[in-house]
Amino acid sequence: MELQNWTRALVAVTLLTLASAALDDYFDLPGPYCRDRGCCPGRQDDCSVPILGNNEVVFDEGTLCYCDDFCNRTRNEDCCPDFWPHCKGIMPPEIPGPILGCTYEGIVYPVNKVVKRNCNDCKCTAISNTTAEMLCEQNACIVDPMIIDFVNNNYGVGWTASNYSEFWGRKLEEGIKLRLGTLQPQRFVMRMTPVRRIYDPHSFPREFDSEMKWPGFITHVQDQGWCGSSWAISTAAVASDRFAILSKGRERITLSAQHLISCDRRGQQSCNGGYLDRAWSYIRKFGLVDEDCFPYTASNEKCRVPRHGDLLTAKCRLPQFVDRKSKYKVAPAYRIGNETDIMFEILNSGPVQATIKVYHDFFTYKGGIYKHSSVSPDDRTGYHSIRIVGWGEEYTSEGLRKYWKVANSWGPAWGENGYFRIIRGVDECEIESFVLGTWPEIENKLLLQNEIPRVNI
Ligand SMILES: *[C@@H]1O[C@H](CO)[C@@H](O)[C@H](O)[C@H]1NC(C)=O
Ligand SMILES: *[C@@H]1O[C@H](CO)[C@@H](O)[C@H](O)[C@H]1NC(C)=O
Ligand SMILES: *[C@@H]1O[C@H](CO)[C@@H](O)[C@H](O)[C@H]1NC(C)=O
Ligand SMILES: *[C@@H]1O[C@H](CO)[C@@H](O)[C@H](O)[C@H]1NC(C)=O
Image (cartoon, rainbow, N blue to C red; front, side):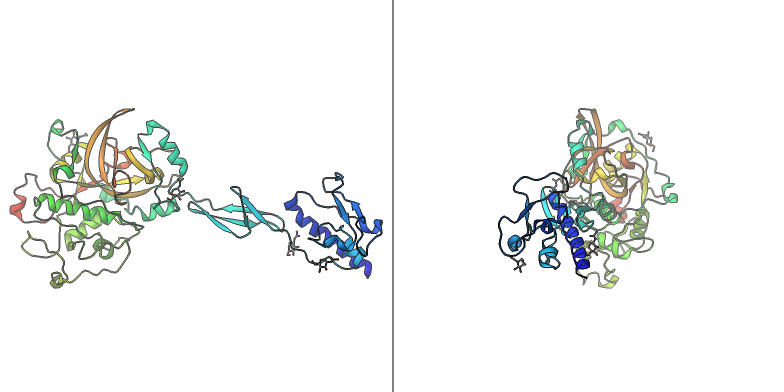
């Protein structure tokens, strides 16, 4: 009976010693130290035995274990492994188990501690009773320092990248889902024939900016927030620009993107994206109210546009230059075919709507002429719609580069005051593939003052 207990105790001692080993790199070998030594009761400072470690080296004078009552005066750590069973006939008292921790970036964290590294959680996780490890999620983050380094250290790239605190800590997946929000046009829409135009491209200026030509008429850069609504924002903004330009400033209006997000629900996904052709047909059929009437909330909130008769009492603006006063409507949107056609359109009618394929590196664009660099190992992409407001060209280390000037919807702190420039004429990121314009519904005598022929698709 006694012996059996002792054997169990010895096993326990062995396990405990093993347990503290992980942190100490070595552990004491079990053995009949006190049994062979013989002393036990009272305080006997010389009642010690040299002890072996697991690396089989006999330690110097300092590494002794004790078999007298005083061996556990501190942490029980210099008692010989068989002190308790041999001298006291009992199991060793509970000693605090090894404190498991994870050393990570030079700091020790306790088990279960979670620290955030960019968009990933890292948790100090116990792998076994004796080891713990920092385990990190492996999501691609919107801001990837590796992309920033690459872009900023390779002149040939043509643009610079920056860390945006709004994007830091967010997964790439969230960026694609909630910072873009344009569904790729369905095939029948892509087959829309572009309108044909007749012009002399040599007569175009080398640089053009809608904001210079029509100061005060062009919608400011907006911030869509964490809502995949670029389909609604770019549509409302292009329509607003066109109202101001084609009315020669008499109808300056900011149309409500929230109206589209909340009310144009057929086949559309609100903050999870929408189709541009459907947005345009909605405005053609039902019209939009102005921004103050239904302000942007970056959410899928309920459609709450006042009834026709209540628009005025609700302080919503009504179009001034139509006979039947209702909401702001447009004629069917039309497609614009190629680089020079797009330039002609902007020059004569104002900003156009375009769709781009957004790659990982685009989120960190800070300035310069963007061109997709395939530095990111993550090839996920999404579609985004924006407003092309002008163009230009610039001499770079790579020679003359032609670009589009484009308004994004990520607020004025992003890119070049909310805008970006992107290579023109090579369908970079598909930007020239699906470009749309529209004609606002305003009175004919205003339209007659514009020379542009009205062309629908
Ligand atoms: C050994 O340690 C235990 C627990 O810390 C304590 O209760 C006991 O009095 C100690 N024994 C001696 C002989 O110091
Ligand atoms: C680890 O600890 C648990 C609970 O204390 C115990 O049941 C298990 O046997 C231990 N495993 C090892 C390898 O020591
Ligand atoms: C990026 O910005 C965030 C917030 O401003 C900051 O905490 C983070 O350390 C920055 N990351 C890099 C790589 O500069
Ligand atoms: C674009 O299309 C028009 C016809 O609409 C054509 O006259 C023009 O040459 C084309 N431009 C380019 C750059 O392909």
